[in-house]
Length: 223
Image 1 (spheres, rainbow, N blue to C red):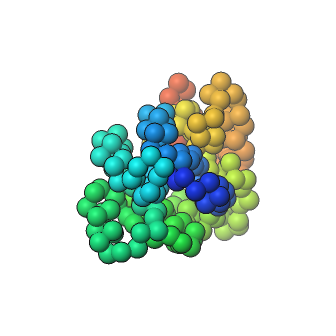
Image 2 (image 1 turned 90 degrees about the vertical axis):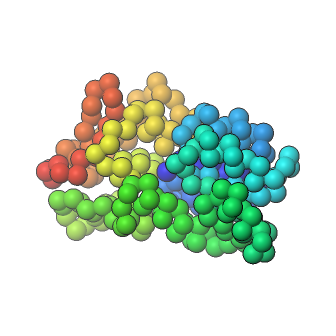
C-alpha cells in the first residue's frame, strides 16, 4: 500500500514512516499543503494520512482536491483536535476516518489494515491458496504450514500483489511499491525481488505477462 502522509511535524513523520515501512507500507511525506499538491499527481496513493494544522493552512482545505483526484483512496485525519465538533467537521468535510494525537501506531496500523480489506474487497486480511497463506494483518506468510521469512522489500512487493490477486500489476506500480517516488524503472532490481519471492512462495504463483506486468495467481499449483 502506497501512502501519502501530509504532516509538518518532522520527528513524528519520520517515526510513522519508519514504523509503517517495517509493516510493508511505502510512504512519502509532504510537510505542507503546497508540497502535497505537488506530490498528488506523481503517484497512485492508496490512502492519505492528513494533518489538520499545516504551515500554509488547514488540511481540511485539501479534501475537495483529494476527493477529485483520488476518489477511491481513503483519507485519515491525524490531528490533536479532539472535540466532537472537530470530528464532525472533519468527517463532514470528506475525511473517511479520524485519529486523535497522540495515538498508538498499532491503532493506525489496524485502521490501515481495514483499508486494505476494503481495497481488496474482502472481509479478512488472510489470503489462502493451496499450500500458501498470506496474512496481511499479522505480516506473516506460511508455506505448507511453515513460516516464510521475507525481507521488508519482499513483503512490500507481496503485499501489493496480495491486496488484489489475479489483477495485473504494472512494473511501474510495483517499482513504486518498492521505492516510492525514487524508484528506477530502468533497473532490473524488481526482477530480482520477483525471483526471490517465487523461490520462497512458489514459482508458479507469480505470473509474468510480457509487456503488461505481474499477477498473483490464486489457483496456481504449488511447486
